Length: 417
Image 1 (cartoon, helix red, strand yellow):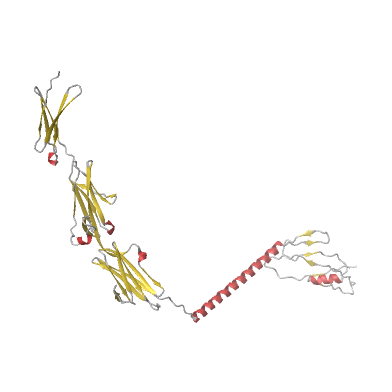
Image 2 (cartoon, rainbow, N blue to C red):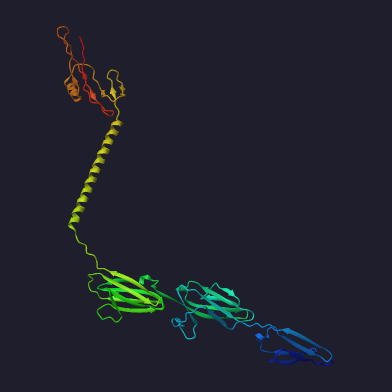
């Protein structure tokens, strides 16, 4: 049989406050295993300290030493700021008890927010506003957020986060920005209008701290406790906005009214002017009407003259074009041929054969503006000839420009027997 050899355990640590527990266990093959547990509560002071375990047998001994490495997640986060104005902290009180610490800054100023936390290992620090991680700088163990030229929209809650693989912690700060009165972002809420026989006005202004609104009508200051029957004023506030309403039963509006809305806090004043006028009456001016009528008639006459001139001009162009398009033909009764003249002379056609003059021929000659005469010969030497007439007819007339003066030509035929 195997001899049971028991081991003796001993522990060494730099401080007290720990406990040990020894135990043993037999395996299925009959062998034994011996052990000892060392239990203590670590702190940051235990970092890098040594723990030694000694095991002694009747004939031998062994030992093992380990170093303590503390992994301590961040538990608290500290926030500091360079803000010096603490006189207006009451204006930035937390909305609920136990809320974030307030910090007050005036519009246009700059402020730095710093935070730090203790943990093992060193935590990762960051600043956040809502779900947005802000740009910050690490200065030693601190994380610094710088806000320059602060605006009203920078107001709100800021959180500093400290994170390690073993855990995280955060702290929240509430930033309040003080600024003077200004027009609400919803400008349509500031206006005046008439409804039946009443005048209504709304004035909506933003500021922090909240402002007071006063109305003036024609130089008279109004208040919310005005007498019934006159202008009535009511006001309401929502977050940083104050809206004031003016209701005035004016009856028939027969004159202009100067209405002023003025909002003020300790940082400034904002003024809005409303000028309300009755409808404008339109009067008939006889002198103006006469002048307008005369001018209208003169314009109509000028247009008519221009139209007539244009019509006459286009008619003349049409006649000239028609004259140029027409041709002229000369019928030669002697050879039966046709020829066109090369100049602008008068064209004659259809010349009848020589013969005795008939009455119809005389009428045609008269229609053709032909003047005939007989050749006078002394009766003593030459017997009186027999006179023949030629019938002439004018065809198409073509004249060069400028047209030479019309000539009258006498034609006669002399035939001796």
